[in-house]
Image (cartoon, rainbow, N blue to C red; front, side):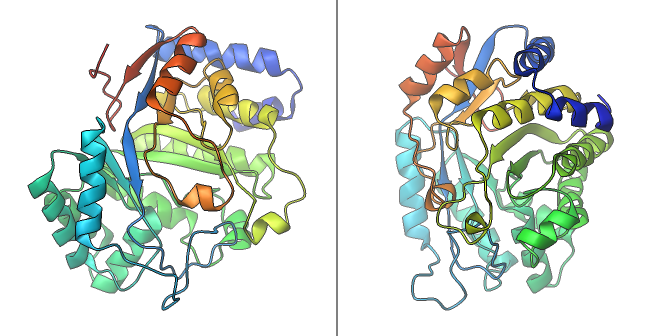
Length: 342
């Protein structure tokens, strides 16, 4: 699919036709009829942040009385609860906190790995850039040292829209598109897998969305390091940006964007449909609009919830939703290996 074709499809009213095409692409990648999910936990180790993004209700300025850095004992307790509930991974990220240097994360990751056999999927590109800067070492060395301490993979957070025109409007202190790509390219070169995300509905144009997808497709063509793509709509409640956005993203817009993502990203194997922002019914529809994964049971999540998302789901909720859509539910791990259960 070309960028022009992608834009045309996003502007089209033929929702069913778009869904059918995306579903056909999904079947090529996943002919076995499985839809996967993971049991993991989002641990937000700090909410101190220097980026002041207009779409975020989670962060607190440095020194704020409501700011925190979780003690290791509290992190361990959260991980133990995750393991006890059948969880296989931890997604840990937080605010961009310049007080936390490379040694802090090396100690934290080693301490976790000494106590638990669990996959560490941690830190956004903006966090890694800041760790590199305040520690006085390169991006590559930052990732390599954290990998050696126990970091297993890197989430795609901080991407928002990978077009600097949009980034300057909604998060002018945050990293540039090239910075975000540099972190993920460096991780891929070191043999580490990462995910890619897109937060849309934040005032961007459809062309900006297509530019985002093209940027990801190019890096994937070069490195092959992305395990999955996760698009999700901006949650406007409780945010400064939300007061400026006139229209919230509709279910139709979500499904079209999901479908175009599946068709356009012809070198990314897994596409995730969201229930955290859209609810279970729309997420279920997403399985027929190109999605093959419904994400996490998510034992804990703070960032999107503080921006207004209210949906919740148990493991059985996700399995029932998948079965009712005509798929076989399978638990996966962070790297999308579905050898758990069933």
